[in-house]
Length: 302
Length: 251
Image (cartoon, rainbow over all chains, first blue to last red; front, side, top):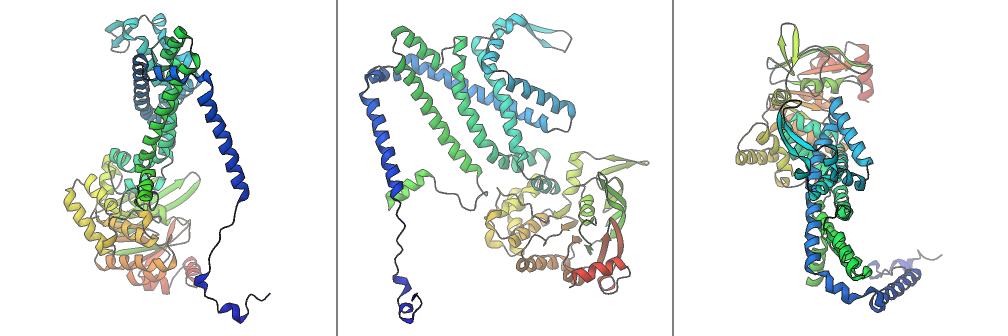
């Protein structure tokens, strides 16, 4: 070993070049994956079974776009009502009052247990159980409405989705609130910040970091769950696609129409999720990493 | 100014405070010493009602904290009234507890705006002045995680000062800091003491107690063992427990 002989010490350290280790197996793996991917794409293009002509013919067809609108409406309505319901459920479960927390627990237990499909059928048949609904003093007089006219099939679907969603949203919000350090609550109370302001300004923004990934998951799941309401003969995306292939028998291309739309909507939701999470990450990391867009801009600018 | 009378507090079976009485005049610095588990922090937390006392009374400026006395009954105050009382008592935590999603200046400005309803522009101006006074005038827009421990604790002190409290409580303000950062926080505390702020400081910094305290209190097992001027308690302790404790921490 002559590494530390005087001659070797004289060489200039600044001139040394670092050569990264080579990874031949990584290259082999990459090549294999690329071949498989090329085969798959080749199949998509050449297999006449995919029938891309029919696919493009129906992708932006009027009845499909209309049905897409209904899917979006169900998703948006279900999500908004679901999260509005989830907030009091989470607050009740965290309440020291045993009645409130038990009621919330029981609601979540029941609505998480009953499959969405079964629930939707229940709501659609509510008129069979209660032929009129009444608003007024509990156990006293009031105004009554016939159930069938009050709850349309669309209303039943929205109600079912929202009630189902609320049970899951309640647990997601509760998890988020629990993730905020006790010291934050103490510091806010020690400063005399009013209770509601403590929640909105101090606790919620920090809870959002834990809430958002799960809420986005729930939202994506809801988007796809709207396809279940086809059982109530509501003309949302999946129902409409079924109607069309029932008529012309082109099952695969029409299922692809629905699939591609669901994928696009999920992609849009994922982008929304990325930027919302980034917004609430302020202060949680020392410096925010650049967005893909900023990376692209930097790469082009170079 | 502060008058604590016969305070008891238990957590389950642990009897943490066993009849503590203590008083401090306005403008004085009281340093509370004692081994861990002696009830120092709990006593401090009872003063601003972060912990409810089981029995006994805490008065600040003549005002009963957390309760309203009617005859021989103590009625607990509403959350809103307690929060109002707390805004007049500053509290500095061992772990700073800064709000991580708000910048230094926002941390300081939050409570004066939302708890005291003071005008925003004026509060922000004052917040920047306070940051300058604790030597952080140039870090106003930094988030807590971008600051060192000592800097965070100085922001936390500025945050407590922004409410212009009658009294500031410090719960081991230097215990979570690296040794070389302790000095910068103690400097701020010394400035406050010299400026006539009423302070109760729970700490293990005997040197700080010796220079800055008007009264040193030694607690053990939920009781005050002895109290008096620093020279008396630190150099000529009368109780064996105090002597044993000091001989360990002064090594």
